[in-house]
Amino acid sequence: MALGMDEWSMSQLGSLRWAEARRRVRARAAGETIADSMSARLVWEPHRVVPSYAVPIAHFQVPLTDPRAISPVAPPRPWLDPDDAFAMHTTPGTAWTLLTAGGPLVDAAFTLDDPDLADFAIIDWAAMAEWIEEQQVVVAHPHDPFQRIDCLRSDRHVVVSVGDVVLADSRHPILLLETHLPPRWYLPPDDVRLERLEPSPTSTVCAYKGQASYFSARVHGTVIQDAAWTYRHPLHDGGPVREMICFYDDRVSVRVG
Picture 1 (spheres, one colour):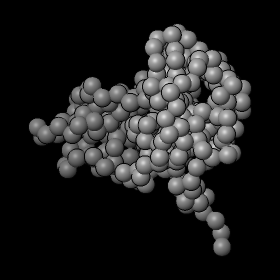
Picture 2 (cartoon, one colour):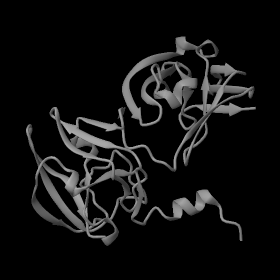
Picture 3 (cartoon, one colour):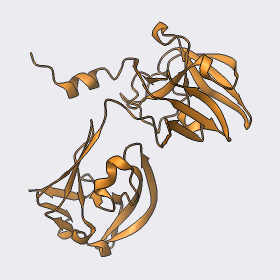
C-alpha cells in the first residue's frame, strides 16, 4: 500500500524526534552569548509541531544550575505550537536554570532522559533575546528542514465576500503553500476594497515569512476581527507576497475559480 507522506509525518507527532541542525547556532540574552555550537540538534518533543534547538552541554557559555526532575504532562490537544509554554514538557527530563549576566533564567534549559539526546540541553526560545543561524537572525522559532513555503503566481479567479458584500476580486493572486498548512491566496491591494478594511493592533511572526500586520473588515456595521493580513517587509521566502493581502477563509468567504 502506498504511503501518504502527509499522513505519515502527522502520525509521528506523538513521538520524540530529532535532526542534525547542520549549521552554527548561537543563543544570546542580555547582550551575552549563552550557547554557541556547530553541533546543535533540532528536537521535537512529543506533540510539538515546531522544533527547539538542543545544544551540547559542553557548548554552553553560562552555568546550568538547580536541576529539577520533570515528569511529562499530557498535552491539552494532540498538537502543541509555539504559543504553548516551553515548560509544558511531554517527555521526562530535567529542567535547569541558566546563570546569565542579566540574572538567572529559571528552567530555561531542559535535558531529556532519552539516551539518543544525552549530553544535549534544549533551550527555551522565548527566554533568549536573539537567535542566530550562521550570521542570520532567526525569528519565531528554528527553521524546520522538513517544512517550506512556495509562492506561485496564478490566474485563478479569487472572490472574497461577506454575504452580499465583495471585499476582493482578483485574477492575479499568488498561491502560498506551506507544509501541513491550508493553501492561502494572497491578493494585490488594487484588487481589494481597502475602504472596507481597518488596521488591527494584532501582529504575528512567522519564521519563514516574517512579521504580519492585520486588518479587520467592516461590513454593514459589523466588524470581523483580524479578517486579513499582510507582510509589509517579508523575509526572503515570503518576498513574492510583499504587501499583498490574504483573508482567513474561516472568517469570510473565499471562493477560488
